[in-house]
Length: 332
Picture 1 (cartoon, rainbow, N blue to C red):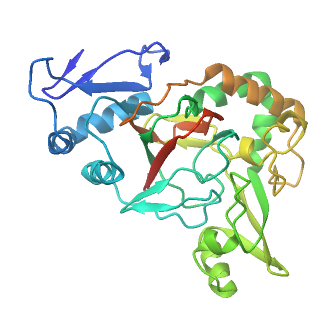
Picture 2 (cartoon, helix red, strand yellow; picture 1 turned 135 degrees about the horizontal axis):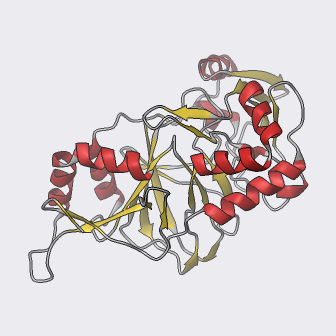
């Protein structure tokens, strides 16, 4: 289907149709014929600015947009694309994933070992000031594996409410509390391995406490390690424009019970805001539901994926044939 003069929506076999027929995610290609002049990066960026209201509407409707076939060849190109959208930058303070700055507003997505998967989560749902939009860019596509699965959060909420209404009622009433013991230095073996110095961009304990407090967290010192407690925070939020309730939390990343032994990183504890444990049987169903409802589209070099962080959970599949290089940028 042609969209304006520049973009066209296409269908991929991995997409899923929502109840109203909207495809998740939306997939956009350049709208030019085979014999036309190849699209240049400046054309793409100009088209983003010119079609920004339509792109925002499509993002709100679908939850995520995959841009494929556009001339985004380098981290610098990706930074230009992010800038073209005009969203304010969300600075990565309080985040637990180990990331390295590449250029401008562009960082590596996660420095965890490639053979490890990363569970579904909303980005930085464990702090008060979280990003609302995420960009991902495929700088180097893997030979196999390494997909970034995505799933609509309101569907997870609805299905969990059907199967575990009492648990969902507790989540809505009490929220969740997250506790993590963070060492001074980063732990490269964990997908939540940032040390407290990297988490708060300082080596001063007093400054770390101040920055944590602004994000709704409390630090307790155990020698040179920090016990970081955040919450209770809402585990279910209302997406304002649609009015839908979304499963906005980091349960799968933080939960370390028997249903999630594959992902347990041993440094985070999550519990209901009233201090009660998260029920294992509900978590087992939750992890299954996300796998049933998610979309996995294999990365191609140059892909740009824009995600509404309020509507969509994302993760990472183990990288079966590295190398793979996915870059990220977070926006308010």
